[in-house]
Image 1 (cartoon, one colour):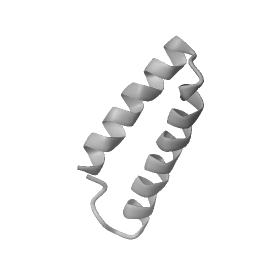
Image 2 (spheres, helix red, strand yellow; image 1 turned 120 degrees about the horizontal axis):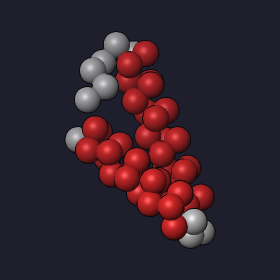
Image 3 (cartoon, helix red, strand yellow; image 1 turned 30 degrees about the vertical axis):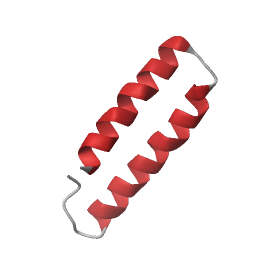
Image 4 (cartoon, helix red, strand yellow; image 1 turned 90 degrees about the vertical axis):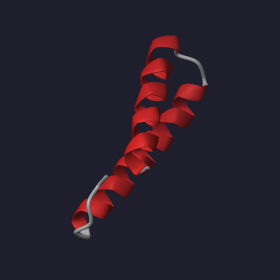
Length: 49
């Protein structure tokens, strides 16, 4: 489930980069949060997927 959310955020982030709408800032923040959550899961020893 986390992988699916991360994939959707990456797609939205790329769309935000291409279209350069103001929602791009929010998508960047969500993407950073998703990466931090995955890193915390890896550091704690859990599977990132």
